[in-house]
Length: 469
Ligand code: BG6
Image (cartoon, rainbow, N blue to C red; front, side):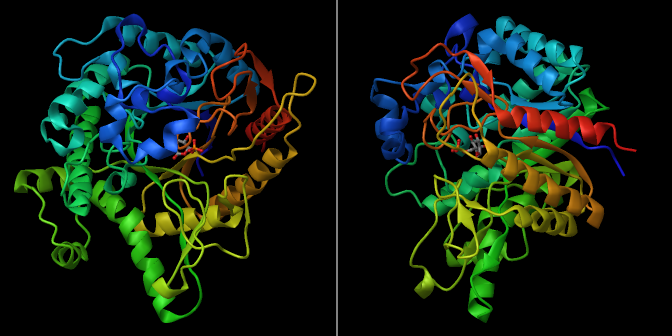
């Protein structure tokens, strides 16, 4: 049985700040407004990118760009053995379509990786975590245009060559299965009026699948010791009841949101049900034979996924109340409690998720996000977050059960090390960290770091795990 990696996770645009420093270009994440306006505009990108808002949380993030040494020192003391982070593509290629990379951006990540490696922390690096150079949206309409595949390939080549001796685990696109629904966020695309949105979503996914296959190929050529995985948001979908149609609807829901993308990225094939699906929805994709061969020849080495909740689904007529969800929402499950933001908490679902994904795909799995967002206040220099300790304890217990079931798990990264900007809401007050960061929804505060009670719990857990017989 392999020894698991234990870590924390983050994303460049939610922590770094320094949005225009050292040559960085604007990215799609830099036009997402703060909490007040985020929700309204996130599904209306056309209006959003030309409007000016009073606050953009990614501009400052939690100032990791200037404080990475302090944060990594805190992680070293925590005892983690891996750190999931992402590279901001627009630091390396500010516009995205240049030929020469930005040296200052490359050297920033050299410093970050060196700092991690100094403490024996393995960097786990996402190539594109919900951000694409903004110029690629304005000039090409993002992933709707196949020219992005070559730009992404060039970016991958540069970072693989540069960091080949520093990074052993790469992830291609964060929560790539959301591309079919979140056209701007995940696909960096602004749909034209009268577009068949479902068709667009599948084209975005296809183009990213081809780009990921090219990245997988390159990664193996340039960094033979490295592994490269896909990354999805996975929530197991329970039938709302034993009614046969609830079972069928739940199955279709899981296929639509999750398994379809996994089939493409891991099996390298369009699922058997795609023909009927595309026919019924009048979806006609631009797919070449050469691309189909690439998909099957260069699939992901492993599946990484975020796990925050399970979902439940059923017949249309029983859908009365939907829960809030990370990206996808489902029916309210009466057996589960929810977080303040309405995300259903289900530790057993994690064991089920691991078993299900392993059974279906038979490749190693990596949990690269799992955590709970809570409004918290600093009291006497700390936060007594017993609820987070309980959340982590229960999820990790189920993860260990899955490992005992025989599932091959590479590691676990909780979301998050420090508090960071919420992706969906743009809020700072939705706090996920083991470490409190003193700033608020409007960017006020000292940005100083304070260890929460959960920091010490995770530290003790990792130490115990690593010293087990
Ligand atoms: C995942 C994303 O969807 O969930 C992260 O990969 C995100 O970027 C995390 O932050 C938690 O979601 P949120 O919206 O509460 O920040």
